[in-house]
Length: 501
Image (cartoon, rainbow, N blue to C red; front, side, top):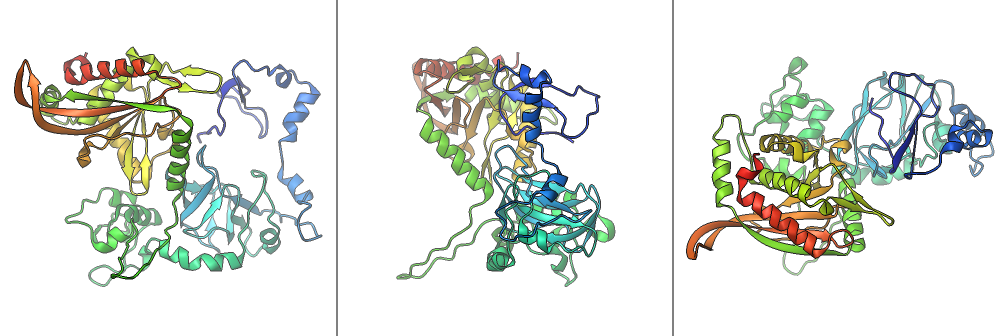
């Protein structure tokens, strides 16, 4: 399994080399500030070792040391074989998780490797795997509910084990520091809201001929996200069961029905004249994350914007020639992304990040490409963009955009950007200004290609132009630097042959 870092900094020490085996809770790595003295941690001094060991909590210690603020005077002990599973932190920015669907229910027997649930984070919907064997004794977060990281998600153990004391006591496990448990009363209060946000239960859905439709929970979730009516999908699984690939490969013959559309967007019925009515729609984890990150960027970075107009006739002709090659597809946005990567090489000041003490110059170029999804906006990252051809960029962007829209993109595929491109040209928007995607120093807003009169060689002719807006963080990028970057970008876009070298 991949092991994700939940901290930022410099990798100062690796304690277990590739191929080596180490016991649980032994020193794996140390992350800190560049140049920080870690000799005390590595020297084997007792004081340093004690500091490290103070942070290690075992299940045995938890069983013996129950929180003193528990209202009950009796200690709550986790029975043998019982595992208390909490809401996992599935991304570095995740603070809350929403259970999109449970693939198991209370009373079900599970094995190591089974998928327990699909959890919606601030970035994607991800499968949550079970690492234990036993019976699901309790589910603490129902479908559609949101809970903080480390709150009680489920309890697994031997069938028939009484876990009421664990539920009431909110006992923490070896992998978490606390459990925020939900009571039965709180669950009952939320049931009505949960029912309104649940995807249809495909196991009881009827098809056009009156028969039941059988589909996997994951297929159900993807169908709901994409607004697909499962009655129109042919199943390739056992006994005709609809599985993930059936939904992902489904091509609708007509526009989605009203019922299908309503599953991915709230339906608002407007009142008659004279009436006033408002309805609260719960913010998704993605919407909350977008609000937090963009609010932080807008109110912390002293930004400014520069505008330029580029002639697109040569780019249009070049794209037509490139796309005439079999199995080749390049968009205008791919050409802009490639041009940005090449311009960043010539203007490294724009490929930077600001910290309170330093300006970080990135020697790699990772371009983020904003993608609109049902709940808001995701930014997949094309890694090492400057080393990729136009066709490679096009294929990568299409792959990442598809994953983003299906909520199957991993957090790693949305991290590490050094520059961002946002394109609204396909919606007919000619000019707009974006908010910087921090910690980037700049973001490029791309407008629509417009046919208009232009002056060329002293003559007025019909031409095609496109407006670009560069928004910069003034702490790292000055006006002159931003202007020079745009001039270089304009040269590459207007002369596509320079990007093929």
